[in-house]
Image 1 (cartoon, rainbow, N blue to C red):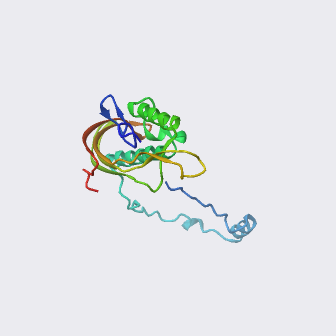
Image 2 (cartoon, one colour):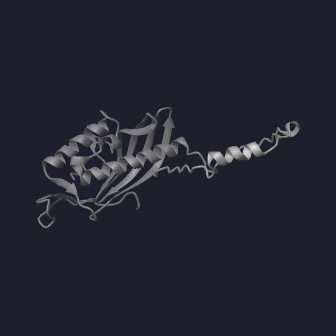
Image 3 (spheres, helix red, strand yellow):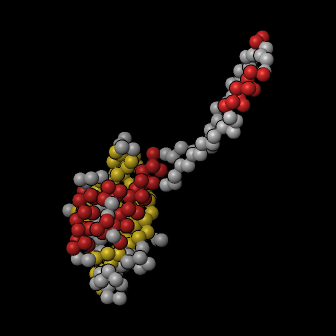
Length: 211
């Protein structure tokens, strides 16, 4: 990827932007209705003692702590960055909605970058480099959040020669870079979405994040 507009940290106007299922089984009652009817008819009822005593049970809890708002922001950010990284491998199938809020600066730059990748047959190569991300701080104010992350990007971007194999792929960018970025996120429909980012610190050819 072009380091100025590559990987999970695109740049715009001088500013940097970068599940389990629930299974419920409902078993049928093991007694046929006819058996239940016969059982009820054969029993005599003592009406003087027909009401059971009422015992109030203490409330039960699952024992699982409720995630904080900061944890929610962190989780949604990490998921969005994972979706952004997937776009580098399949730019023509990028899930833009999973990356950022539609129409935001991050969305615009991501779409521009993926168009450039697609037009020039560029993509990341599995097993060659990686994108390591650490969330360093999260601050929330109402429906806005500021998150600082440190990213070490060693992805290798190639110019794909033929889809049938990698033997004729040409390395387009194999440089390494790390960035500390302050991100802006907004809460929408219960999810925190990346809006934009500002680069705070950059190191080319090294890891300022201490991974």
